[in-house]
Image (cartoon, rainbow, N blue to C red; front, side):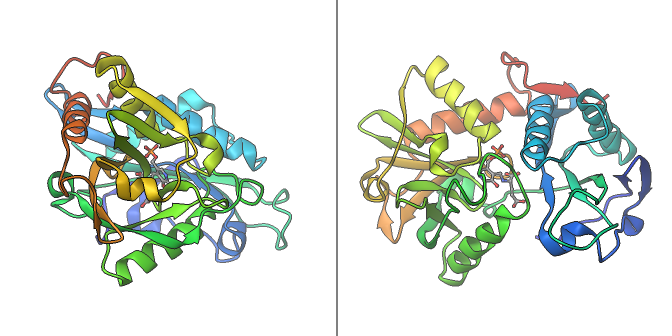
Length: 308
Ligand code: PPE
């Protein structure tokens, strides 16, 4: 989906017009992928625009930066406030928020340390991530021929730009083969995640999701959905190694992510999953999740931060 420009982007301490938010081509990030980022949603609710799990996302941003020895020169609380200010200044009622922290211009060479740590926050409108009908109908996915990077090559707990080169291979392969998304296996052949989503499998009333050792991003939607499944629906959840064939034998599969929200998977490698449409557990989780984030029900988990 082409991005629709908004008015202002916050760039290193200043609000600049969208078209002027630029960096030098010799910035370290351009050559070596030196960046960590977040994707956050702001929903329009009956009480005005609310940002979903702002503190948790900014905490993960700082965690990602820590792994790569990048010191973010703004305190976490101030950084949260900046995200809210970008939404306010652009008068957005609902939007996607993209904070990014990267190494800028100053030195060329693999060693990032001489390059300054810089940051930007942009917002824009972002609709359904896997197509307009995905949430209701479910998506067709394939198991990628590409694996996720092994734990000792690119750390999956960091939401780093470089991880998305792998994600791009997975996504391009899937799209060219006529699927909406690819599921990557980890280096040992166990199910990992989609190019931009975590994955959940339901089989015989039990929920399975890959544990953090299987090269998955610790998704914030994953965390929210786990709370709904365990605390509200009282389902048994197993965090474990998941062999590929469990995908074919599942009663239901769904993806989770800030952008994808809760998206059902209709089939994998053209093998139908369960009834081939959104199953009852998926539907219950999806509907509860969307009511919580859209402020249609009481915010019992304290997930929402008002923009104004
Ligand atoms: N795994 C990956 C690889 C991933 O990129 C995301 C988010 C998730 C899991 C789910 O994490 P969370 O959003 O915290 O529940 N992917 C972002 C979209 C990537 C893109 O720019 O495209 C997102 O959903 O915002």
